[in-house]
Length: 122
Image (cartoon, rainbow, N blue to C red; front, side, top):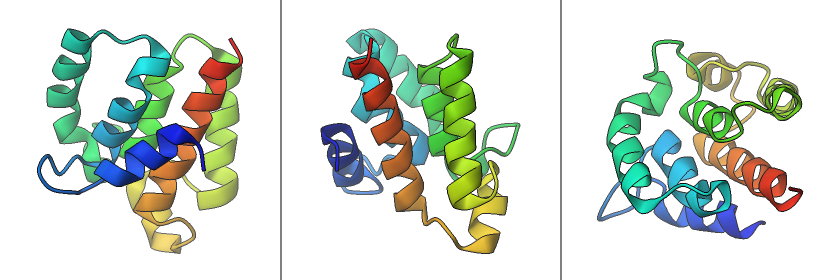
């Protein structure tokens, strides 16, 4: 398991911050993505609403956060999309959970590992 995935799963829904899936991926991958601390703090507040498919698109929060972190790289976004569809059969939180192929923790792990690999290759 990558270090970003380990960090993400260590903080996912855990006391004291109880970060949701979107916040967890963002927090674990912020350094690799080059986010400043003030930007990270602002995004963590914004992403509070995006867990459990809370974004207006209904997307899995972990997937959404990972896509935002690799934004601008169409190949990376396509690869990440393919990874989620192949493993979870959907991009929406409801769709992934309805087929029970990937747990929320698995979505967080996959997203964090992908983002970390993406930025290591740059």
